[in-house]
Image 1 (tube, rainbow, N blue to C red):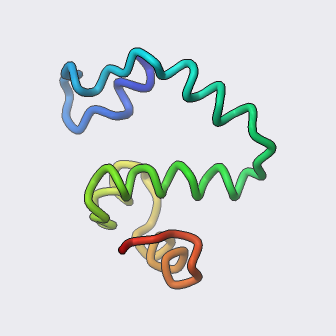
Image 2: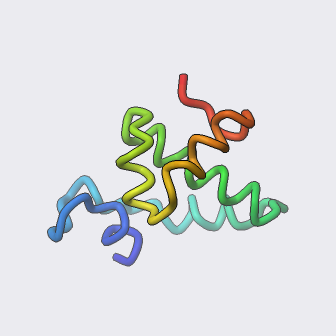
Image 3: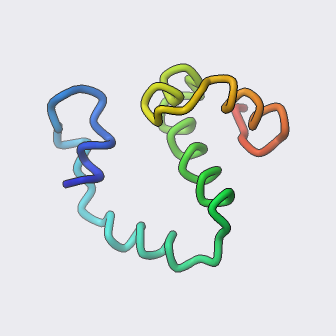
Length: 81
């Protein structure tokens, strides 16, 4: 339910925000030996893919500066194409 509240665009949680296999996905992601930076990149890339590369929306949803995301894109850490 916590993930559903993060995935929701509005104040209400809808059916599409609830993922039943989240535990295995999170366990799979957490079982990898990633640095915090690599984990951060994967999370941000997931949101960029989910929201059609809308940098401003992703910056707002993740509470990160849009200039940070643009800098990561320019450095090749994130893909927007």
